[in-house]
Length: 311
Ligand code: XIL
Image (tube, rainbow, N blue to C red):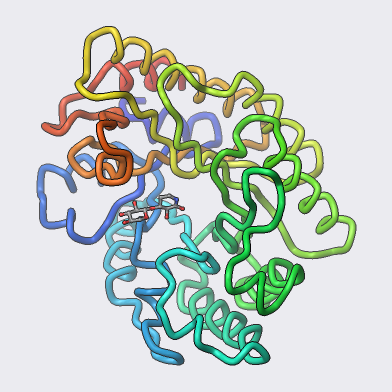
């Protein structure tokens, strides 16, 4: 095997990358995107603000462009994301309370139906919990109540019985109050017959701070009876890069890959884009960055070599 995607595939997993439409005009970028990775996540344009900008008006043109590109390279696609409090068009918050459950179901039915057969996993609900394990007070939580998550999963299953349906969140990589709450939700869903197949661990990590219990945590979810996946991996550092930080970052990437591979139900790993040129980190965490396996000039960093060796 010569690529990260091939190395993962040889073990029945995938190694993929998120991407976004504006980057697709960069031919140096698309060359590596199409050859190195076995899986693609649409980084933005499957989100509600893009796919249903006005009630009942659906637009999948940008997402379709990425899905078609992935198909042309034989890459599988993760769908991200159906129900989330961010990148939600304003009109959703103005829907009368009693109509919001129908609006949510209609959104899921249309989007999952559109991509049926093209998306292997869906992030059905994203980031529904607070750090202390309580429910985030999103518009869905406030107007529909605790049952909105189960309702979302039921609607997704009806729209595509073959796609794996995931709950996805951040800061649930280690064992703690937040991951405990997700664990309890998954346990109850399985007990009640709510259709859930997987949990996505976003894995927006910091150099030197990979949770020591990551593998144990993945395994406890797998033991419940769901698959797990690392869905948005990046490992950021305080800028500027130094040789020392690159070395520590590489070790952290290796650890995370090993944590996934040690769990037979870990489906695969997705980096949240592959090059520092297009990382979301610097815009959201000022002074931090250099979080990905390729630098901004598409050079392979020590992190790339560490992932390659660990796979
Ligand atoms: C980020 C995108 O990368 C940015 O381009 C966008 O401006 C904001 O969203 N958790 C998620 C992802 O689930 O959807 C987010 O993606 C990063 C955090």
